Length: 142
Image (cartoon, rainbow, N blue to C red; front, side, top):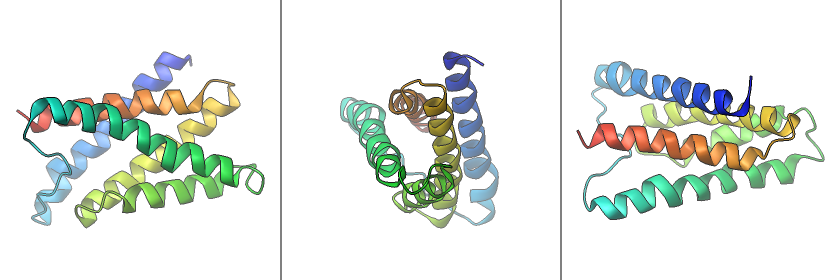
């Protein structure tokens, strides 16, 4: 699987999970928190679609991987810690935390795959994160 396919499939998978949580699971619990806010479109694009994915990828994935790399060569603690912190940082609701925890675990795994393939894992995740935020933000504005 090449880099573009990895990025596209990961984006599709994580958006499908988010759709399941937001369209099926959240209504069961009467949970309307999505984390996406409407308002000034330019600010929304700059913050949610550009700045946030870069900052979150560096903070929750790249930095944690660098810190844990010497004691966690397999990456299992990296996946666990990154996904927990990523999920908790999206504390709009318990459903949203679970959704972003699962997304974080997938993204951490993709980070390790990219690292093993000698690709730039940070760039791959930033692209995936931007694509996911772009799709979800666009849908929330409809």
